[in-house]
Image (cartoon, rainbow, N blue to C red; front, side):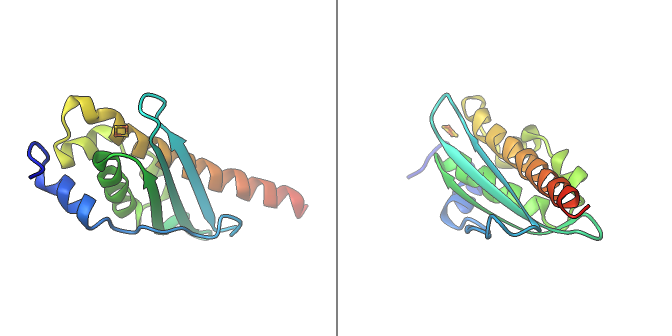
Length: 136
Ligand code: FES
């Protein structure tokens, strides 16, 4: 039926991992909300970070978009878990695209996932910086 898509895309599309939301105001949560101007698809990826170690202990996402975007965010949510934030932020969309065997026309979908991870890490760090400032 869904010819042309790699089985991993179909798998992550049919059984997306870690779909959900965390409380955005939670000080341990970073939220990355990004959109792809070309197609209008939107992805929200959230991470829960252990403050002491800087390790991502949990992740979830919600994606309003194409099958490749959903699959990319599902993969991203799995890959960031257990990683240090800086290692998670270093995940390239090309690795996700390769894992899912995305065709060139679908590369921007995996780009959304890379951007969402970076945005989530940035949001977490900004939140912590703000809290640190507030408690001075
Ligand atoms: Fe835009 Fe896939 S078509 S994210």
